[in-house]
Length: 319
Ligand SMILES: [Fe+2]
Ligand SMILES: [Fe+2]
Image (tube, rainbow, N blue to C red; front, side):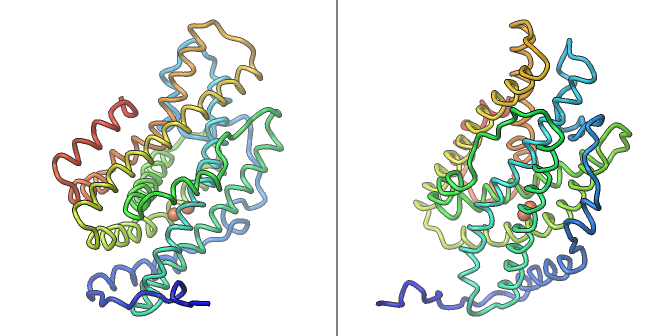
């Protein structure tokens, strides 16, 4: 049997400044390292009299004719979808980062260590989100459904070019920083456990976003103009696929709410559908697009025509 497929590529020299950025990620990763039970959950359970996601993420202020208790329930449903969404996206993120780590097997071992730590943290995050899903499943009425399945979604995402997957990944890991910022204001009605989830996730995601950037730029430097152009179309397809999942999940979450709280008038139902989809689009698409770093990186790699193509494709999702 040929072993060529197992042979790592020849190592490429890395400039000292880039190696220093990987090294800095390792140093911070060691310093902020946390454990699921000892630091995050700490034998706590969710308080179902509180909101799970902060107002800055839920968009529920746009809902009229819904009581405060109903809005709390909707924030809990959105919170449950939040942990499931991250459990799903971190599946393909981890697979892609392990894939690109192959190019550091030989050569710069600092970069390799940074990506191995990244992968280890992402596996831990998935385990945390599974634990949180279990706590919510125990405390909430039956009937909630998370529609997408992690592995088929990962297979679809990973079928696209590495450039596009790294772009999507960088976008996701940058928006976790926005989500943390929206969770830190004082709100006595916000779940303390969920606030800690934002805090601890952000601590490690901050390094991941830097590593995504380094790997994305490294991948970009290898592409021909034609390959980059095809990758832009891949990124658009990925964004559309994510948006399609958000449409399905928002519909499922509205059905769950109606099942628990009873039928609404057609106008209220339409309003609820619109607000839930707007919230999910904001959480998983717009908050990343609006990240100045993501915009700067993306536009720095694209021609004006390619940037306009991306903008045209995203416009229906962000307005
Ligand atoms: Fe994560
Ligand atoms: Fe991450």
